[in-house]
Length: 488
Image 1 (cartoon, rainbow, N blue to C red):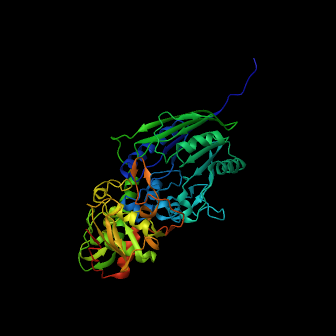
Image 2 (image 1 turned 45 degrees about the horizontal axis):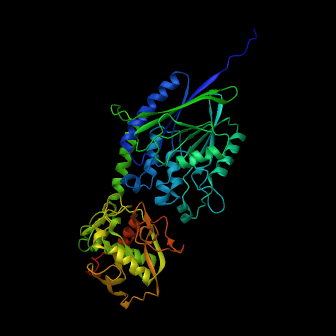
Image 3 (image 1 turned 30 degrees about the vertical axis):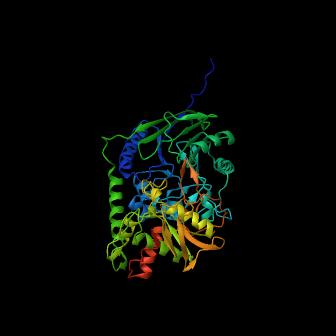
């Protein structure tokens, strides 16, 4: 009988998370689970990596908002992650320039081959791929950030995914990789499409769509895995690799539920406590003075909403500003205002924006924004907050809710002059007011129902909280602005 050489195999376990969105408590347990599993795998002669597929950060978590995502990167590093992909949480909220800071905190570049400026250069802090030698096998990891048309606001390209992934495969193969893993924040639909259009991928570990894929999914021979969201699961992929040929011979995926009885990871807990302490110091910084309380009412005219509208109008050098109170959370007390006070009052990610509208378009927006019924309804984009009554700056009017729609407004004036429906005006707000979201899922999501061009100009990465903070710094002491801008 012919003697055949025994086939040598290498076992590689990839533990993964995605879309944690600031759930640090859950991450402390997942990190402990991952350390235990890594120890078990390595004790059995295998190899183990821990990867995150984007959006570990969350702008509504104070520590992550104040640090512009850096605190999330600190957590991933303390938790023992080997690789991480760029998501949309921090870059779209605070601008892609924060990626370099996050990469520095993580201790290595973040993976994203499709975040390109207009010259085709990668955003600082990103690399398209990396090859890791694991045992005797070279494994190529390719990273993809989400595709968003909003990247163009920041001067970035929004390229098709397939050519970028093909180029990444070629790059890692030239570097000696025989196993190809795509770490993706594109979402499951795009990931599935890639399996049809790109050859050579062994495994896609994904995020962005918050998909809970029990047992993985096989398409075109590619295993796809994704671990839901918010730290409910730790994903586990086990690969058996012929380490002589460098080929995957077996692959399987599973989801491990969060173990409530597992003690939190002490290294991550210590790092998170340090971040919280640093943020407390930052939030204690004074930013200005106010002569009297700036109260906030979500459904009626209020001094704080009017002040925000004034600040936006001045920031954008506009004639008029329209601001929905959904951006605000609470009042500001009289006296010294700290950065923490501003964060408590306004956590809006909305970007200052300006565009040209006709007087007729303005009248329609005012009719919608001043509707008392709409004011009491939850804003579809407001995470449970109400639409509220539109705050205005540079404009005055009389509104009669009992009149027929289309005729509720009268005596509308801009800078003291009667509004002309045919004239154009420079109007400021944010993407929430000046983007044509129109109707979606049966709900009117914005103040606009008419078609608009692409003349809107955004100031990115600034958001409305930045606008409010800067206004207080520049104009202190601040007095409460006038009320009665819209006579009811």
